[in-house]
Image (cartoon, rainbow, N blue to C red; front, side, top):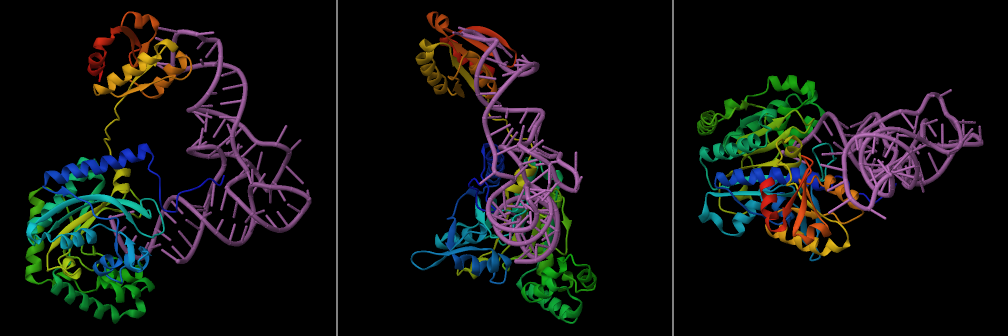
Length: 414
RNA sequence: GCGAACGUAGCUCAGUUGGUUAGAGCGCCUGACUGUGACUCAGGAGGUCGGGGGUUCAAGACCCCUCGUUCGCCCCA
C-alpha cells in the first residue's frame, strides 16, 4: 500500500476538518472585529532576515526550525514560522506609523521544521492579533480580552487557563538576566545539560526546566520581582487590575518566559492540559523592541498567536452544515424539467442536489445519504399537472405541491 | 535533534509458542424492491499485512534498515 502520502508533518484538510478550522477562524475574525481589529494578510514567505533579526539568532525557531531556501536571484527566503514579524515588517514597509494604534487580525499557515506530534505539525495554522503603536497597559488588557472572548465563544474557555507574567522593560530584564547568569554559573556542575545550553542562549528558560535537579536550584534562584523597576511593576499591576475588572481569570506564573528575544513586559499563555505536551492554545506578549530591531522607529507592540489545529480539536458548538433538498427525476422524460427546477430553486437561495443515478430506490437512498431535508420527486404524472411530490425525509410524509409554490414551501421547511 | 511504542480492507480492530487459501464489525457495490430513503434479508468487491532486506522447509508474527503515526524531552501555537 505505497500510495502517495503528504509530506511529513503536513495534512490534508478534508471537508469535515476544514469546517472545524474555518469555524475557529470565523469566530476569531468576528470577535476581533468587535474590538476594532481589521483583517489583513502578509506574504507567506519573507526575506530570511525578517525572522532572523526579530526572533533572535539563538532562538530554536531561527537556529533549527526554519524552512529557508534560496530564490533564483540568490536571496535567502523563509516560509514564515509566525505572523508577528511579517506584520511588523509590513507596518514599516507601508509607513503606517501615522495609523497607530494599528490593530489587526490575521490567519494563515505557518511552517516550522519540527518533530511532529499531536497538535504540532510542520505546516500548521494560526490566528493572530496585533496591536502596534500603543505603549499603554490598556492595549495589553484589550489584546488579552480578545483572546479570552474567542476562547469563550469557541466553548473552550473552561478547558484552559490564562497564565501571565511580566518580563519587565529592557532595563529590568537585562538586570535580572545578568543576576540569573551569575547565580547559575556558580552552580554549573549541578545544571542539566539542557540548562547549560540555556545558560548561554536564554537563561530565563532555566526557570521553566522540568529537570528535578534544576528545580532544586531554581528554588533558590534570584526572584524577578526583586529586579523589576517601579515602572515595570506599575505597568504589570495595571494590566492585572484591568483583567480583574473584566472578570478574566488569570494565574500569575513567575516561570512563564518567552523563547523569543523581542518580548518585554507582559507575557501570557492560555494553556490547556487536554492536548498532552502541547498545552499552549494562545500565547503572546508585548514586544516593544521588535519594530526597532527590524529597522523601524522605536514602536511598541503587543499581540498573540493561537494554534488553529489545537483550537479546532477542542472547539464545541460547530454550526451544522445546511441540509440540502434532493430533486429526484422519475423517468427519462422528467430529467430536463428537473434540471431547470434545480436551477430555479438554487436561484432562490436553497441548497439543492439532484439524485440522478439508478432507479428511484437508489435515488432516495442517495437523498438520504446527503442528509436531505426532503426529496422532491418529479415524474410524468406530476409534470402533467405542474406539481411535484414532496417527501419530508424526517417525518416520512409525502404530499403534492405545485411547482409554482415549491421554493416558498421548501424555504419554510428550513 | 534525543528516547520509546505502534503500523493488518476505505474506517475501527481480531489474528495463539512462526504452519495450508489472512478474518470480523461498520462503510461501499448489487439484488429482493424496474415510482419511494432509514429497518430487514441475500450476495459481491476491496489486502503484494507501510516499504525494503535478512533468518527459516515455512514470516502478518522473529532480526536489521527505512518511511509514517503516536507519546515523552527540547521548543512552541
